[in-house]
Length: 399
Image (tube, rainbow, N blue to C red):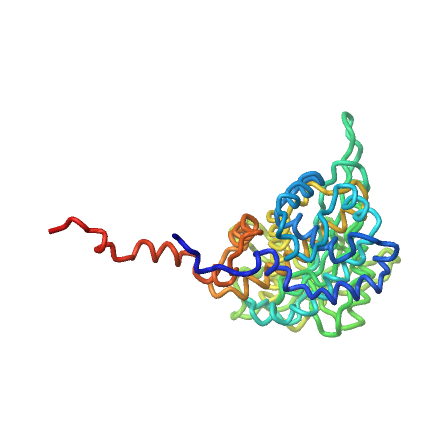
């Protein structure tokens, strides 16, 4: 009989859930009164069901209830007393506030962010660098206002915009805010909580001259790209030392005017990108760092694009288990929770795994009783044992 040496007394999904302390969930539920008047399907059971939904990639309420019904005899591992019915899950997604799941995410972030920082694979251009960007998730019904004009034929789709800030050393969101897709990006800048001397980088969609002036006074450094139609006056051109990258074409001090006509100054750097055959113009309020270092800081901005790509590729954010904003936000928060936990598992594994490959293994073996970390350490162990086994004993009729 071929016995597995990676057997575990708990299925993989339970080993994933072990990263979430039930007491944290209960305390959060008590804080938000999310279990008030609830006889069945409390906050913890709701969270576990949504985690199962997100990891397994279910796209409908019927699919969730049918798959979980097929796991009879195993739900005790998940802390569930009953199978959630379609109506129960639908009502919970509509009634229970998404703020509960947001707080659970932030609790997990506080617990694991130092580990993610210590196990990082690359160093950012500067310490304490924050990256800001947004990503729009298209909705099938016009729940939230979409961007652009109404089409001539058909109905315009809605969209939810996820404004996000990440720490470059952690690779997971530390601040998130949701809005309709039509909301302009720059409104998110006033919600940022930045320390004196810290750095923040974002693209040119976040133009806000008043916020720039506030950061100048608060000694908070920012790096962004200059808009193509920006009007400015050159005040002083700085010498470019020989030690600076040859791609730096110009380093100067410029003057701009805000909407009230008040003048303020910034540093402008023109940088030639040889691969794209294009000149990039960066603006910043930092005059101390070398010009090529400013360009390197902006290059780190791509890290948040990778995070969004990882989130959308590995978790079902095309189909939602509800047609209301609260249900949509709950599913996004649970996806962020799972992304964080999976990143911790990836960093803890004693073997280098691609995130999507690791997710595929976990997704297809959610209810399999194998030791997750033992398997991730050496998944080919059983195959190596079979292929290297001494087959001399099978030569029964050899002379």
